[in-house]
Length: 103
Image 1 (tube, rainbow, N blue to C red):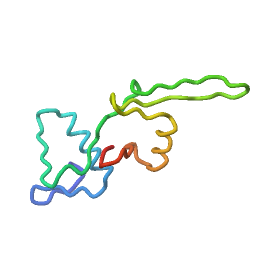
Image 2: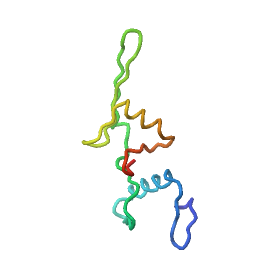
Image 3: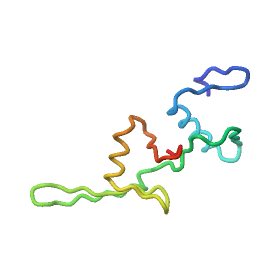
Image 4: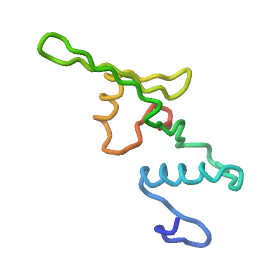
């Protein structure tokens, strides 16, 4: 919020990337911050993926290498390499859109 100009106790954040970064920062504060969504939750960082969530396997196939892998976001959502690469092609951001305002 220090990078964004305040106006009457409010901050208008135009870029979705900046909003998502702010949400991550607020989530790390835990219970010391209370977030209210008066117009409904439009954006949500559902999981902060880490290297431990990523599984990669490289195997030799004839004269080539084959890579397979997956990113486990939670028990219900696992992205395989093809899905992950397809989603990454759609955004220059480090936040991957998962649908319904989830990243």
